[in-house]
Figure (cartoon, rainbow, N blue to C red):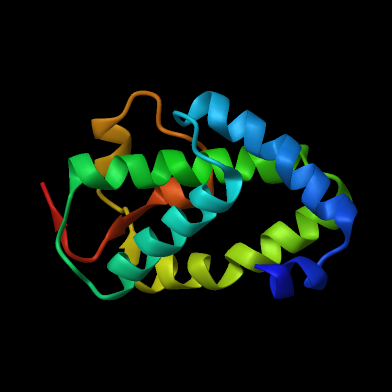
Length: 127
């Protein structure tokens, strides 16, 4: 972790601490880095085309919503770093999903978000 800490300015880490507090208030004491790791895990599972039940997929989308909320609250520098950190995971997510032409997600969730990830379903979705 010490090597990673040197990659980014202290202001970034200070802001990550602040943003982690926001995440923790919404995700049962989960930190921002933990949320980003969780998104990375979700994206990897989808990219491997593992079967995903709709009930398990929805929390993935809500997690991505929170990541976007945090990004939108961040300063420009921190926003750019966070976007760079999740870009490969977003690419994996795209690889493991397809357009939701049947609007399965919208039918299942009245409170579906508006992020682009809500318009995608896993290639191996189990209803």
